[in-house]
Every structure is written in structure tokens, then in C-alpha cells.
Length: 237
Image 1 (tube, rainbow, N blue to C red):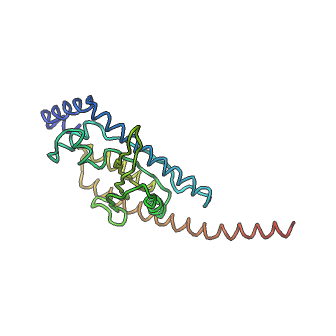
Image 2: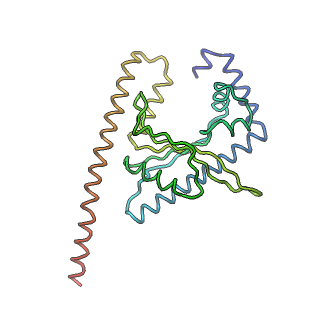
Image 3: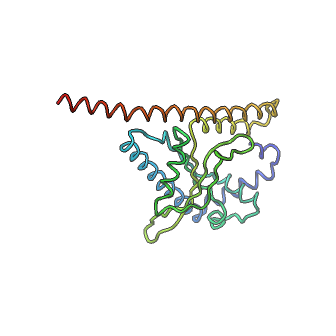
């Protein structure tokens, strides 16, 4: 960890603070709520994928994963922004403690899933960042949604925020490689590798669009083939 090597005192404070909040009842209760919110979002996405499977004979979602930020990451972000280190501060200031990642087959599927998810009347859109239409400088592409969703506890309902990242397989593979590069500070020829990674992002984006175009052509042919088979079947009967 880079902070441990270059800033040992700051790393020590972060670790001590992380242990402190992790053991507090308020923090454990808040993390439980975030976990429940993730379950709600994942269930909605799984239902949508099943619905598409039945209605359109294919699944737009390849896989769904989720995570909760670690206590160390939470404390580091609070300290970096000069926010208090407490459960209330986490709830009020951090929007990405709970995260759900959705991997889609095609770019069009990303926007289709986002659209139908946000149409649900118990989902509130807090913020949207479209890094597909407007990629980051380093080439990163993904659609980010911060949503609020209700969770129903024993005696009340509460809204919790979840960050939903939706991307294609190629975007996800690139992001994993870039993440590995970002945290390996002893790599030689950093500028050259950054340029190569950006080029890979651009080529992956072109590949995504080309595969989407091919898929659209296939789907245009398939209904016609199905209709022809039905006509032959009726004549035989």
C-alpha cells in the first residue's frame, strides 16, 4: 500500500480510525443497511434480466457483482475531504459506500438497463455520470448512477444510496487492467504505458460498437427466420 510506504504516520491514523469505527455499533448498523440496499438493487437487476430473457430471448446482463467499501477506504476518503469520522458523516457525505457493478453484452444494453431501472417508482436518481459518451482523459468508460432505494426494517423504512456502475465486458476488462497499473508505482515507462492503455480503451470502444452493429443485424434477420418457420409449420398442418 503506497500510503504505508510513503506516509507511515497517516497510514497509522487511518488504520486506527478504521478499527475504531468498525467496532462501533452505529457503524455496524449502517453497514447492515448498505448490505440490504445492495440486495434490493441486485434483485431488481436480476428480475429485469429474467424479464428480458423471456420477452426478448436473450440476457442483456452478463453478470452482477457488488461490494462494500472497507473501513480503511471509508476513513481515508473522509480524511481526504476533511469530513468528520462518524457513521452520520459516512451516511451524509459518501455516496459510493455500497456499490453494484453490472456487466452488459453491448453498449445499447447499458442504457436500456439504466432506463428501465430508473423508471421504477421506488428508485430515486441522485446523480448520473456518463463516461461512455464522455470518457475520462485516461480512456475510462462506464455509466455511473447514484441511486436511492428504500429498505424496510423492523419498524421503519429508510432510503439508502447505492452506486451502480454499468459497463460492457471490454470496458470492465480494461478498467481492471488500468486499476492494476495505477497501483503499481514502480513500473518503468509510465507515460508510454498510459498512452498504450488509452489506445486500448479507444480500440475496445470501437470493437464494442462493431460487435453491437453485428448483433443488431443478426436480430433483424432472426425474427424473419422465425416467421418463415411458423408459416411452413402452419402449411404442413
